[in-house]
Image (spheres, helix red, strand yellow):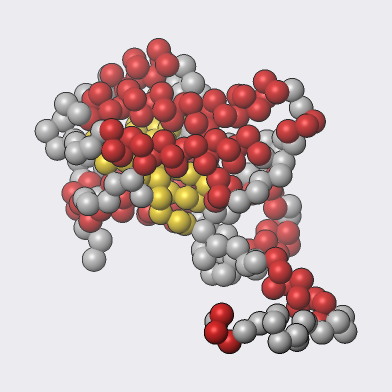
Length: 268
């Protein structure tokens, strides 16, 4: 059984915690009894009851230092703020790609660095959780800068887990496709989202609450010996494209390769 009782009364900061995946994380920690501070550049219309909001640009090191320094009882930081538009590398100003990397990699470094100074002073230390992406582990045409940043974020995770041990645990959640209010921009209308969901082995897109539950686990006493880890949260991953290509070819009358050297039982 997952022990989340230890979260009651803990103080958690969630960057980008006012909407989408971040709101799911905020709500999950609040439901687990934590005191939650959500920060973002824009104030939301509403938040779960009891959640405090602070307007902060996580790319601004001075603003971050002031913000985190003002929370001396911090226990958990979740670096969730991030994202990208569709941005092919060869078709846009290089400064836009640099800004994507700044938001998705440099900003988590800035916030984590500030949080670590607080957490190292806490008797029981604390936990930092990075919200990564499956994009960091596969080709991501159209979002290459974002994917590169997310790949870097996982390396940052394992490096900080060593640098800041034993007082501070650092982990990542490697998130797959999620259904949020912005899903239409990525997957199209309801039928498009349903078609995409069918490519996931578990048959659905993740909900922000799924990401929140993973973060609560990593921050909880149940994960007390987990550090430097990247927890896959992708519903089983992505079905290999060659399986569908082979099925389509077979259905169209072209049989799969039956040569003796095409498949060997001792390779199974």
